[in-house]
Length: 315
Image (cartoon, rainbow, N blue to C red; front, side, top):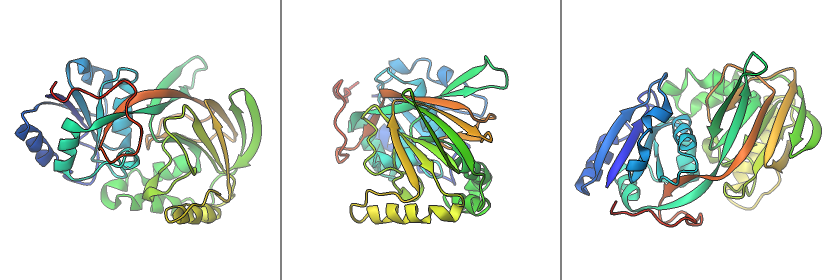
């Protein structure tokens, strides 16, 4: 089996077991091509011949994995999310193990599932300049983006604890007036952030929206209605309870579903997508790309199989 591996050396807290992973692939007669993703790398160039490989492996954090998944969208090429970042939310949502030997075996013999992706349309400083990026977990404006930005320099030393520090540094976030366009329906609301969610489980394995489905062709649009960071505690508590028993309510959150969403904010707010912070602010638009990514998962994963069939393990 020939495997293309794209790795981001800037991700994570240390050695994620990549040597053991590659060695196990070699034991099963796989051939591995390794390419490095740097800050100025063109992901499309790194994946220029991806169709010649039986598998693609993205080694890094969620930003790395989602950028590779977006570049491979609608190709049907099987992608493994190798968890080598800080939070590794994509791998967690797909219930992938962290053991490198297990990951190697899943890469070779695992099944594939189709997953929705989100596409974000970012507006530049000039009115006609737009940039499109993809996300697998979520995009957010306001408090969420502020926390991500504050945590960026701390992740290498504190891991997921950096997000707690980022939140503590922003206990009194900006309260904004939001105008949401949800599939053509306009909603006026206010709060400290809007999250556009595809995969529901975020940091510390908390589910933002109960019952979110990354295969239903919809995005969950979550407004954080509180006026302070402390006001989110009831929603966090509900999410914690949800891990033990069914607790569908999310106090302090206003939740909608839509295929396409546009967010305007007064005042304008910063943006993030899968932990990446672009140099622009609201307004921002997003829409769903139904089942655009093909991820490799273990046999234990409950998600339905790929409707296009299983990959050829002997390729």
